[in-house]
Amino acid sequence: MSHLQKNRKAWNHMAESGSQFAKVATDEECQNALRILDGRGWLPDDVTGLNVLCLASGGGWQAILYASAGANVTVVDLSRSMLDLDDREAARRNLEVKTVEASMESMPELLDASFDIVHQPVSTCYVPDVFAVYAEVARVLRPGGVYISQHKQPTSLQIAERDDRDRYVIGVGYYHEGALPKTYDDSYREAGAVEYLHRWEQLVGDLCRCGFVIEDLREPYRGDPKAKPGHYRHRGLYVAPYLRIKARRVSTSEESVQKKTIWTP
Image 1 (tube, helix red, strand yellow):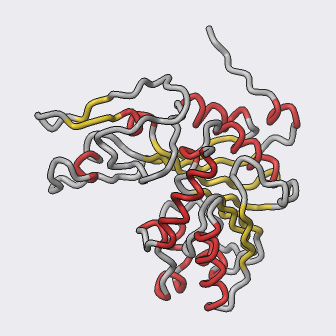
Image 2: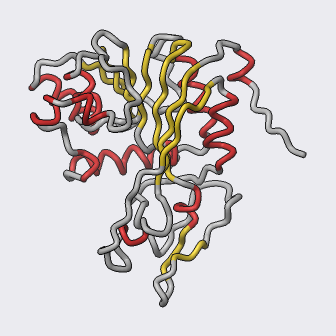
Image 3: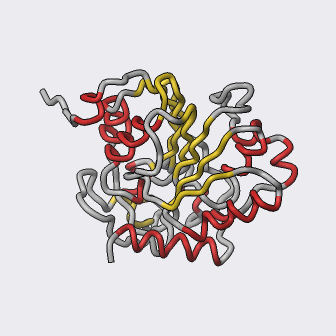
């Protein structure tokens, strides 16, 4: 079974079992959609009429919020069950949302330069080549368009266990190739999913090589000083699990998204 098949199965299960990752937007959230979506001031003050791609973000939350704010929304996800939640919530709220079942690495149904905003929650960890994702985003995003993405930090995915002194131990090599092995500490791993570690030169460098300029980068705080050892928020005090990036599409050069050149001294 390929990584795509395994991840589709895992996310279908999460959608069907009421996972925390399949919580649909509430009425209160829909009334304050932009504030909920954008606590950092990265989005325009008004998204009415803008074409927004919610990438790998099915589940009845992000796409529903954008549609509630007046955007023209397309949501792409590998999991049909996650997309079913978007379809259900859009129909219930009388909103227009287009759902597309596809991998983030290849979206042939979407036209070139057809979106003003691409918003992607944590998901690049489920594909082996983040460059392919960035290149596809560059293709569908208009020059000047905004790409907001969230990723798992490399160090977080390197942690393998917690020792008897409650220290978090790196047990996966930084240059690990292929799918990540199972680890004792799986605080920030999704059950049944196949995940991959992407290095900083890939997460940040490949984004620049695909024609984007990074305008901001944040590390969401997930720690809690009151959390007990073993809890994911205790681990969050020592290693930031995620990073968020705001980037803007500035290059229309075909060469910039077709060549992957890494400078070495």
